[in-house]
Image 1 (cartoon, rainbow, N blue to C red):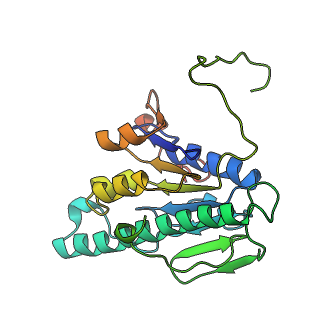
Image 2 (spheres, rainbow, N blue to C red):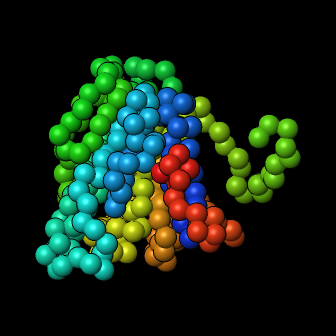
Length: 242
């Protein structure tokens, strides 16, 4: 399996920043990228840029439900329905993108698949550029440094570098927050990871990943807050925190 699983977690700044940096790197190498944002609005500066990056398909988090501790049971049920649906659509899109990239590999150079490229928008809370047009997707339960010394792995684990290791990248930003709030079932996310296409790389961000999620990850990076200007009374700054 070429596609691996990344987790960016911890209480420090940088989880989303790292995930989106990887997304840009993938897109720059011609790898289609699907991004879904959970429990976030579109006020962050990266949103408008991502919408115009070739090869990136962005799901917007269109509905806001407030803080979980102030939500009524009815609001929690609505949030669960919405975020579960968002997860399922994003996952199906990621899987479909990986499959179609593999199918199109014989027609195109590198990782790019498909011949109908262009900018478009859709009505399911997402935007796309250079990805083509997909359907809303089915339920997950029904499918799915140059100049620096490097360490050399043992002979039993040879280092390989195929021309194109993955066919698509799926970023689920703040999915852990959605899981820990009860809006996306941890079991559904685990099942999806266990049945993902071979060539789909997956990035999960947020605090407090479950032990089961950690056991399935190939990369786990914890952002630890050593110092933060918030401690001096400095609030979130536009262009840095959002």
